[in-house]
Image (cartoon, rainbow, N blue to C red; front, side, top):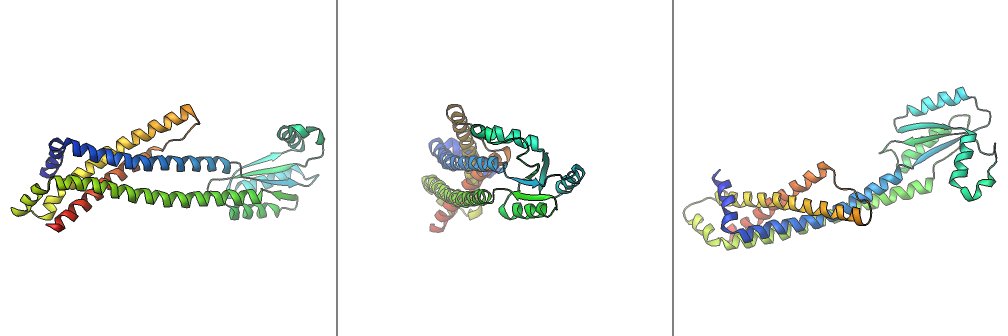
Length: 281
């Protein structure tokens, strides 16, 4: 309780420096949050595209509907499969004319075969899994051909993997820079109270006793900075959604994690700054 009281008193004794610490943490996390917002929306866009990954199995003419129904039940039980739908020749004709309106006259009744359209669950849309499911479906005797846009699926997976790697690398870089900036700011606050720390050392205070109020102060500043950064990011996201394009915001779990990261950054920055100063005494 004494350490917490000392940490709260520090805000009253040096409001300008305390505010500077909170604002520094906030804008460091705000920059990190903006990058995270871009990464989240890229992933959302890729996920929306992945929803269109589909395996289409074309059936031979004259296949009994009973055999098709049994196969659909079997395919639907695959752990990778989300849904299975039967498309009759007439339905295939209507769909083709809708998708290729300028060339609708090319398609005549009886030209297109019936098919089974298979959609996969999230997490099972990588090229290897899609190819494996397609090969299993192709093993049925009445399946004439199976298509799923192999090249398109492979390119989509490469883009997603590359986006994840770049996002992780830049995210770590932003985190390191944020901790360095926060540590430098808190070090200024520590130097402003250097005499107080020296006096505490002279009267026999341990390093842990001296450090604890500063750690709590950095922790509180980190939480306040994290909340402020979250508010700024939400405001930016809302403004972009209203003025330009619909933008997805962080889910509650990620938002909470961001505030916790702010608290940890404040704690680490404060611990680094205080520890460095104590080693010089």
